Length: 213
Image (cartoon, rainbow, N blue to C red; front, side, top):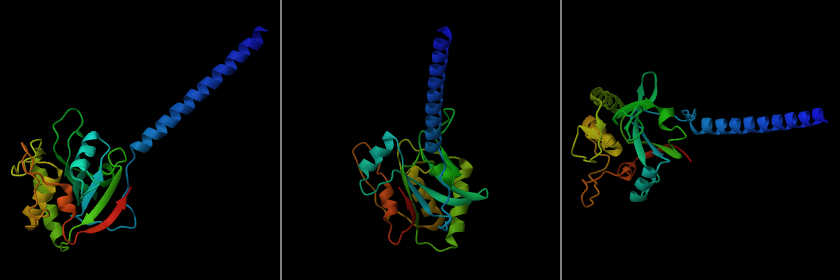
């Protein structure tokens, strides 16, 4: 009788262990999926100067999309060929590790569009000449050389710190003399005039290269 009871409890314990292990595997697979990188699609030809837009998953991203109701995206960066791979120059709050200050950075395409950071994304191409891409590349490296902080004051007149759309506007204006916003600004009480992502993405002649949802 004892052997039967012992066998029953051992069998039950094995079932519970197997069930727990299965749950852990499912959770692990889910987390891995959520943190996975998005590769450059093989059927598109990227170019330095292309604009990358993403919709984040944070509460801040939802606030941005709500305020800028002319776009589905909450963040923007610019593509450059850097360190033998496609990378994005951009600036974003709350992404630095070890409690370091938020700064402009250059990071791989796949990391910018990582699934836990982007619920949807888009690649746009400004109507510029091929030779202009080198000017954008060189100026991007110049900006990167002084490693500017994130602009928590959202002051587009301060060229020592940048928020995401401000950085893109600054690079295009400084490198090519092109204002991708065409001078559009949004004014609110107690805020500096703001540059929306849609002010850039609606530039005349801009072309969609790729999109995912």
